[in-house]
Length: 402
Image (cartoon, rainbow, N blue to C red):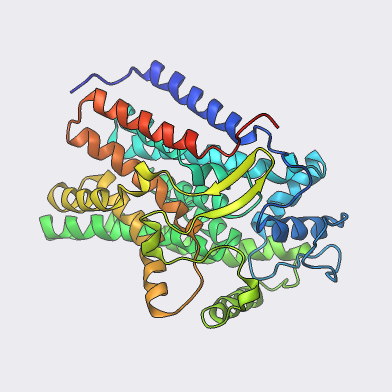
């Protein structure tokens, strides 16, 4: 087994990775000017309306009351974050998208921290973080003012806080995820899946329940359940049509239920897909093609095509040894992916390729941990990273100097 990098060298590599990743995310972030990219228009219009600013061309809410959030089918927290950036930095494309760039960099950092906490290996942690940074869809969502990257960061914060035995922080992060987008409920589902598998395995081996683990799980769930309405009440107090958080949740649930059975054809702009299609990287999303920019929504094939072997290895290792990294891979798949598969099988609700984004850190963790567990030679692992980097460069959105 090759020697691990020293702690100091690992820190240097991590800082370099984060610096380069952030630089790539903010590079020409204002291109192509004051133009909304795909569904950015909804969130930017919401942020502008909250601040009472002049709207962009093509405003989808021309009759909205200034000072209020017109995009009421989603919680307000993510839109408030975009509005805060505009208030502080000015109404520029950089300000619109800087929160996403920061969140995308935080995702890479959290993948490193989570992997290191679970495996105690710096090489595995650096590999997982690097693979996450090399995913094109992760890059795209870090460069646009949409909500998925915030939810992904908060899911990872929820899981990292939980494995650090901070169930209160875990519950708060899970509640914040729901306050950004209702799909943020995946955060607490991942925690439940992780703890359920870990506790059940402990029960089978020892014939006793781990009351400490069950207590931590109960605290995390309790804080998230209480935190969602409290945080919504706080966020909604000035800029929402729903000062009452329960009215807000009821409306969003009703809107979500309605989309299960009705979707006007003229409203379909983004190619719809089914969850099992995401595993073969089909239904590419063309976010923007203008000038030297071609913003393509696809996953790195060296990650997404690893889904089946990674999940199979994680299931085997979790059953045999109860390895924490394997359990975490399965928990993220169970909390973030399987509900979408079930929903797609039961009802014809629209789904899109970027819904798979929170699963990418699990695949990065799984590939890194699996290669280490199988004692894959260092040269092969390096070659794999080079191949993933080549795919990333191929999908890089800029094909020239703007």
